[in-house]
Length: 237
Ligand code: AP5
Ligand code: MG
Image 1 (spheres, helix red, strand yellow):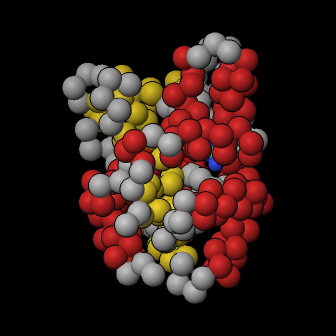
Image 2 (spheres, helix red, strand yellow):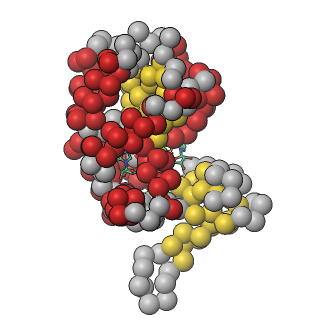
Image 3 (tube, rainbow, N blue to C red):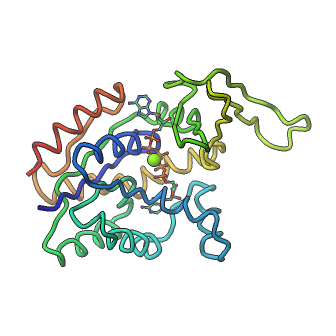
């Protein structure tokens, strides 16, 4: 039987962290539209370039492009028994598209897990996130700095760009920020976009089927949130 899980939550709520944990437990892959779009950054065609610019500003990619990218991913072999959606759907049009896509295949969304987090903490989770380009490991200067030997904000001498975060892993590797995390305006824009376009999906899924949407307090340790996520998936209807 197939399993389709949606992880929903404001930027920094921990969708990526939790998706990585769930995919190991349930043997279905994480489908992160953000990761899929970021993977296009080496492409030089106009669409891929435009997508990188829209993301850096913290705005959403249009629904048709997003749905097409998801459709392509869902058609891959490892996705045939289901997936964990991380950051999709994010608009009512994307949710409607997904329902229709799954219905045609005799499947449906099994659980929508809403990771609830206040916007102040969400801002810090994004602003403080750094990643190793070499290993892909993620840290956070505010919440998860075990393994970071030093970090500091560095000003440009003529203030030509906002202060940059320099962080170094204990192995000596340089840690970098996503462009949309390095820009405070882009983080605020993403939070606003969540409130305006994605939050209406909470009511959409609550009304779709009782118990489909489960609220989880994301302001707890990663392990505690994982336990709540697993309990919600196991109790799915
Ligand atoms: P996307 O990549 O999805 O970014 P996002 O939604 O802004 O979410 P984040 O990845 O920032 O947060 P997260 O919830 O995954 O948090 P994480 O686990 O990393 O999207 C980027 C862009 O792509 C969008 O702005 C848009 O342009 C485009 N896009 C993507 N999907 C789209 C769609 N469907 N439609 C249109 N456009 C789309 O955790 C954050 C930090 O907190 C980490 O440092 C982590 O270590 C830490 N942390 C996590 N959990 C905890 C915890 N419990 N305690 C302490 N620290 C924690
Ligand atoms: Mg993420």
